[in-house]
Amino acid sequence: MKELVLICNVSDITKRAKLQFALSSVALPCKWVNRKDYLKPMGQLAGETLLFTTEKEYDGPELTDSMLVFSGLSSERLGAALRALRECGAGPFPYKAVLTDTNRYWTSLMLFEELKKEHQAMQGR
Image: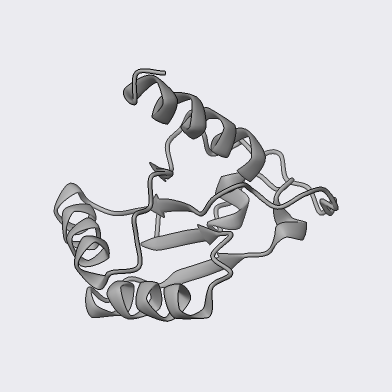
């Protein structure tokens, strides 16, 4: 699996530039996920060959916040990426995930909802 960061819903141009700079400083390629692609499985967006894919386009509302999904990174590389993100001043990015066997068939919408639930639980709400 190749290294890649999937990025959803970062519309602020300054935040996008800082995020791009942070990821390029640790030589991580990124893919800006278009809203219309939110029905595609995360693995498909990351360029994996999956048993199930879709070309169906999403026309609903945008995610309520940004989401980053890390694919193919070792724990050392993930740590470097997270440090670069903290230092770039674009954050915070509370909705982050690693692409796993469990979530590779989830859509962006499904993963974001799960991350929101986890974030709320960690915040004690």
